[in-house]
Length: 159
Image 1 (cartoon, rainbow, N blue to C red):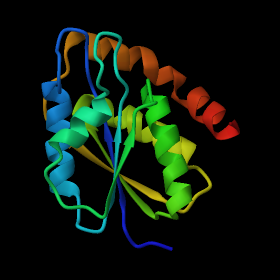
Image 2 (image 1 turned 90 degrees about the vertical axis):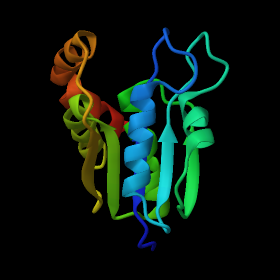
Image 3 (image 1 turned 180 degrees about the horizontal axis):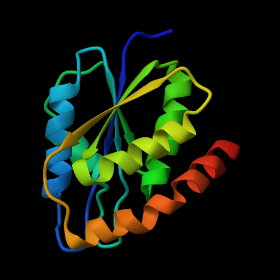
Image 4 (image 1 turned 135 degrees about the vertical axis):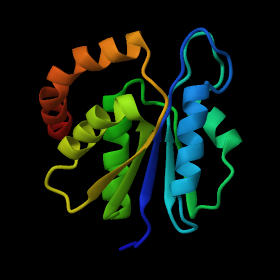
């Protein structure tokens, strides 16, 4: 069993910005401050249609901290996909502590999803957030997605 933590960094992008989005960069910088030399870091995010490079790969290219291992997940296309992959890694590595890094406006829902998917494991989830303000679109998306959290978590555990 490992004593290292898993630091999970959720990607962010939109169709208007090429390269690493400033919101994603802020999440990455926060993760670098949270990460210890033995921690495993999961960078999670997909490549949007117009971009040949995934959010996870862009984050990996910009990563500037020591860690035990850097894992890139380019397959997750949603917050649920992010946390399902993170939960699988928690189980594979027998990690007891997960640090979830995202934006303040996204953190509560993302952490609730991760805790739901990890239900039954001994892993604890700590939330580390950035402080940028939510856009009206982000706020609306969070409001729409919140009622789906219990169902999404249940469905993910059944996979």
